[in-house]
Amino acid sequence: MTELVFHVGQMKTGTTYLQNVLSNNKDFFQKNGWLYPGGKENHQYACYGICGNDIPWVNPRIYGSYKSEGERLIKKIDKFKDEYNILISSEALSSLSQDGIDRFIKATGKPDKVILTIRPLYQALPSAWQQLLKSGINISLEDFFRKLDSERKGRKNWWRTYAYGDAVERWSKVCSVETIVLSPEAPFDLWNEFSTALDLPKGAKLDLAESQKNVSLNMETAKLVRYIIKEGESALSEEGRNKEIKRIINKYLNNFVRPLSGKTRGDTKVLPPRSCQKLIEQWAYEENRKAKRYSSRVFGEIDLLSSYSGEWNAEQNDDLEDSALKEFAYQIIEKYRKS
Image (cartoon, rainbow, N blue to C red; front, side):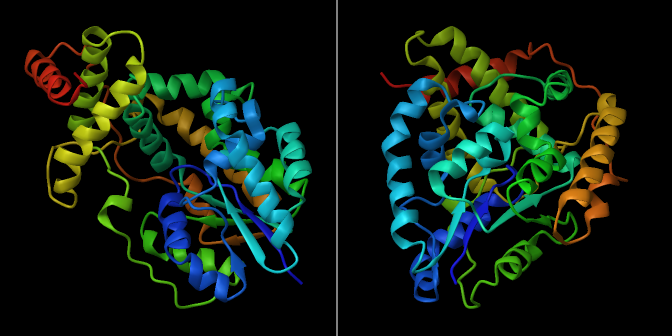
């Protein structure tokens, strides 16, 4: 008896690591009864082509670009569902509304199990803010948290992407949801918990190439990235500007920041803002309560999600008027912009 399993994220919970391990060991898993279909490290783009605007950030252009990829994934599932266990992994699936989930499983078939990897909000949300900057969105840390709060009542957009309790509740109406908690103290336990939840064969190679790892930002680097976005909005022509800013940021991170990975640099980690402490504590309490209630099984310490005894970031100066950083950002743009 084969199974169809969806790993639905969430974002910033070690999913890139899990997906690269699965992709790197694709042949090994297939020989042992598990199909991880497609030629990419995950199924995010294919899900864009299946779900369309059921995923909050997917517009008609993105949907059209990946519609054929979505159709290929559906055909693979249908072709091999009786021969292999099939694992689909896409963080975007945790952001689907209930109607969006129903439309997705109508296309792919009902899963036998859903796996949701989750991480304390006080870690996941600062990491999510870094990801927004990498994608060319210029927003301060405090404003990011305020935007989440404004979206929370409607359960929409960015909030829906990170509200893990809501995601467990929605998917639990379809099938059992097994939740894996990424421990702040032992992040390398994630693969063990994940492979145990799916009963994957042992023997996969777990080391990743440096290029497959996410680049983490400190506050100093994050501020420089915001300057690059701001200066790019002035220096670059409007046509294709957002795409070009994102490309320049990636060039800067890969050439300047990635080589320093693991080395001490900068003074300030990206921590949750003290001005939003009560909000984060309230969110964590409510999401944790739902995760406990609707998860069929939990791996890891779920109570870690609602407790935080670490440091908080003080309010940041948001004027972006440092002339030295402004000049350095402009130099980076001029170095990497397309002529």
